[in-house]
Amino acid sequence: MSRTRDQDACPGALQVHHAADGALVRVRLPGGFLDATALETLAHLAIECGNGALELTSRGSVQIRAVTDTARVADAIAGAGLLPAPTHERVRNIVSSPLSGRSGGLADVREWVHELDAALQADAALSQLPGRFWFSIDDGRGDVSGLHTDVGLQVTDGGVALLLAGSDTGVRLSPDGAIPAVVEIASRFQHDRGKRWRVAELDDLSALIAGHRVSVPPGQRLAVGDTARGPVGWIEQTGPEPRVTLAAVVPLGVLPGRTAEFLAAIDAPLVVTPWRSILVCDLREEVADTALRVLAPLGLIFDAASPWLTVSACAGSPGCERSATDVRADAVAAVDGASNEDVPDAPSTAHRHFVGCERGCGAPAGAQVLVASPDGYRLRHT
Image (tube, rainbow, N blue to C red; front, side):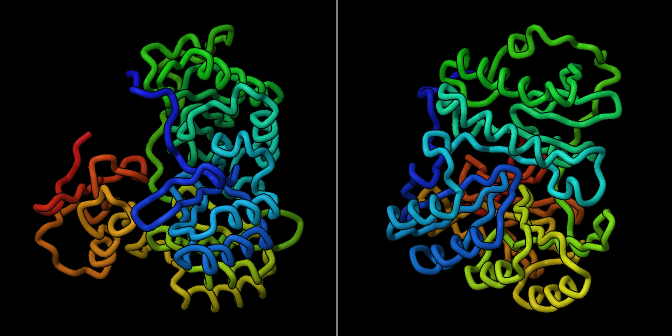
């Protein structure tokens, strides 16, 4: 597959997208890592220069819509340390297991995220990677591998598995050699991709792993499934002292600026996940209990049985000129149980993603995508 142009139009903090509701700014957060001060800055920018809310994306980024002063927003984002390499801002698309190093997993991969981010920024040629190209680092639990990123690592008992387009290549890497191998593969893709934006668009992936020994036969490779949801609720951390992570699902990924300010006021490490949720980490139990009592009434979801875990949507109207309708309103109605003859029935266990056009932006892996049209919704078959 080859496209008509060699670069996509994914927005960043400097290269903004002009949507129907104004300028849209997107901030990459490698690993989803975010400190309280930076979140406070983003919340203030959303309130003062945007539509009053932050949007969490399906790649663990944060964006602000309807920006009225793009220069001020860019300067503030840089000042918060969220724009360390302006030339590479759109290629820092790295997701990792959000609970790594705190609960579960086979290894703590947080430093791998920092190592990969630094390596990407240090390579001038990689600044030309498409903005949709992304990386995953899975600590062995199989969560972010299920997002089917372009290049992925997954820790196993027998080494670090190398994944391309969400499939195990059979290559096993040493922990020390994993990040250099990922950078090498990204460089090969950039050199040879032509007008392709994603690894899955290549006709032959073998050139990307040339020189790496395939040691695991097909029948013994990782079976990578879709991952539709992340951690939710009260999570006990492992470690010498009792600590808690609160994992909050943000309905439709829309985080009101005032709610973001409350999250920042907890003054704890934060992780934004690809499942449009946010983790508040390393809390003492009494702090976690108080935070939970404050945040739940603000609309954040801590219940793993909530219907909000099985419904998502793209921006829709009026923010996107391509959208046939206000899909977020229809998604809210679906959660509320309102009857809508324009929406096809779906199994109660299915994740439904409402979209306003054929592009299907933000659809989670394995979701049932409901595409809006003037005649109602139809289920998109892939």
